[in-house]
Length: 266
Image (cartoon, one colour):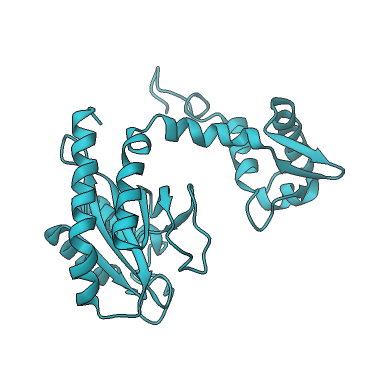
């Protein structure tokens, strides 16, 4: 029996709003324009439900219609920019990252943790080194990325293991992106612990063959890991040379951004 005064599910969860977000997320690089039937199929909504949401989004200016097809409008960027503009990292980190990229002549990125994935906040590309096109808002699995392992290291043990298990849908085995990917929760947890202890992380050929990345934590004024900063390069030389060349500059840049966050109360 429900206790008197206990919130009902409808008090906590606005279903129509959740479905609207589901429709927005159904548009991506593989589906930039969709018919009503396609949106309904991709979201599991009825045609009538999908139509109501699409017309509402169109009326608000977030979706535009082209014949039978719908696509997101540029106004949808307001939703993401509201997050970025509220984060001091966006304003503080970019010049530091620009200097880092110029110093090491490699691509530089910053990301935060969102569940079992990392989300890119900033990226300064030196050259294209990945088959994946990355930009602000791009997502990658945390368990096989250097930034992901740094960010996972900022979690408590219980939360970290729960996040890793979410990456594997509860299985002790994780998806292999390459032949070199660590594919057990136990092995990744050990790698995360090592990264946390040494204050940086190196990942070679685990996300993509031929890709090496170095990451270091960015901390807020409470010492919490707020974000991760990394540089990425081709796996063409000995790791010792990369560590000697790039790691000191990367760690200094991460400290500089952390100091700026502390001064601004971030």
